[in-house]
Image (cartoon, rainbow, N blue to C red):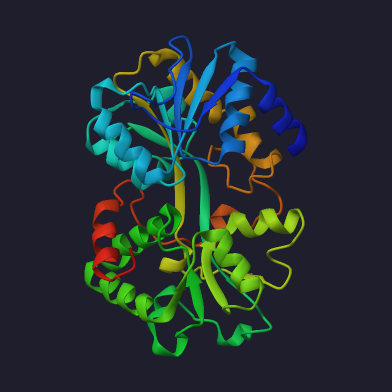
Length: 340
């Protein structure tokens, strides 16, 4: 297996052209001979997948990077004229947005067969390629383990005022809220967000939240697991003073978000796009999740995740439909609560 540095070096030296923006008359030029990958996944992971795919097939790729929500809306706005062949997301709501616009082609059956049915939509229009778990990061110098909330829903309680933080404006946290909405319903989610507005400190993203907990600015934070595990495997600069708490018990705080891949219905390189998604879910493609240091979960049947992680099945995530998470409703609710 290649180590993280080797994978990154290979990715940067491969025939992959990464672009910083999407579309527009003054935007980057599309290479007509390259597979167009619109990606809101982490750059290192996307490049490692693209490099491995090119090495295996000889097919050149071009990556356009962006954020989940903005890139999903970008594709919908571009419609049938979108240059995108493949769309990769960090969280599934952005893919659902594109699916609801009827812009996706069915994923090849042989590719779908690599993923358990509960990790892909019944429509077959896209599939998960990785997963991440919601966790509570906490500073044991600031709060005892016995005083941690029993449920994510408890954080709306006034006793937790100024006791926790989150990256409310990011797609990651909004996906967690979308999971809550699907599991708890609109009324309970609305009340919880109002409590969050009163109680929580708002940070830029998961990393900023984690570092604030580590520094003792706030005792607890709601983040995705892999940010903590990455830092622990490297410098521990942002996590040395912290631990993780898993809510489990099908609590909204045990929500598992699926990273998604879809092929555009009007893709100019449709066959190559299907091959790319199939490659990501192959043994080689899923091994990238284990060997690149991404610390995200592998989702294909029989694929191993990083051994540092608790198993995906042990997380006891809530039984919500990850394929119908309503990002637009979440945006409205969070705006109404004064969080956006």
